[in-house]
Length: 447
Image (cartoon, rainbow, N blue to C red; front, side, top):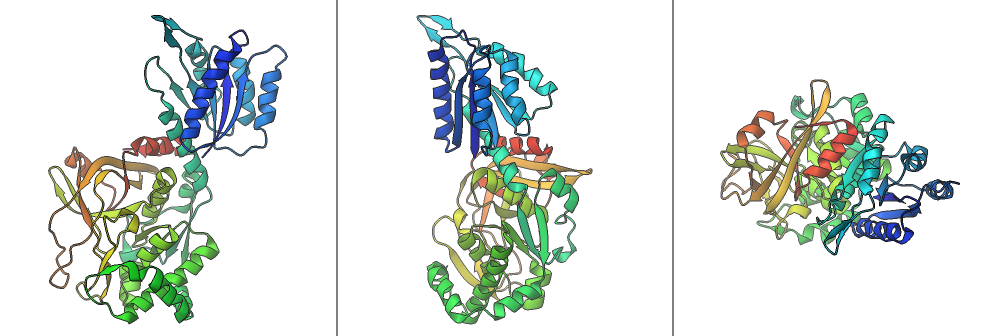
């Protein structure tokens, strides 16, 4: 996240006041971890030395967003002359505020400056967010940061690539995508590659490379019962084959043809492959060729720096939903040890199933979808708690306890009436504002 910070104040305001106010605002931004390029104070001096100095300073620098920090009254033209040179970049119009001294308000007329600018910036077609401070209240720097993170995420996604092995697993409708509108609206490219390529590469993986992964990662998993070494070896070989493809093509997320691909044609449930990809490569993973599920994941990861794990719905309750997975969860959301067990489901071959406990806590659950010719983001805040004992019918007895949470939400009926698919992406904490900011930049409707 890179921020250009331009601090403004009128030429007749005491310069040390503008400098000090801008310095405090600049430090608040730096505390967020952002890389900040700062130029202040910028005044409306008659010869426009400050304006020209600012334009020269920011030229050639790479930043996601420019913060136009109004620390006191400033004629509109001085701000616009700087902003216009960088109009291709989103802005934050950030108005600071006065203070209380000896029982009286002391002001530099910050909001005179911002109120003169807000409509002007709108009329000029700028992409911007307006944030103003209030005397006596905590600084609203989090709103500035949320917008900056959203812009940074948007910039990342413009060149992102997602890899899909196969396409449209189980002939599902809700996992499809439309390439041109996705590229236009959000940016990612989704590329498909064949399962045959993975198989061919896996056959050439050496035993030394396989053993290295087993020693480094698989050996750290807690096995509830012994697994066939050939299953482990095959899973690691497939993982290493996919890693080659990911590294060569720069994928930030992947999905595999699961039921009608890996399981049906290769007789190999891919849970451990997904685990290794997520935990060793730190990329987003989801099964069943869920294209927009992958896109939702990379949005969440770019905004929160979390892995963007998927959960799917099993039951609805009055106070929430049972959300779990029939295969794997990334190590990042595991509470305690990564726990696995060789299991078989129905007619499928035995595979290494993740049966880890999932971390509890406040979370945000969301899903990108197409609706009425446009894109929508459905999201809800909730609290993940232990779901208690449950099982999915069809597993060999004694049935495994699948990774899951009971997600408590305020209005299950409202959520169910708007639900956009069986896969939703979770992130811990309340991330709704950042997601809303991102959607606003992309023109995605939030529901």
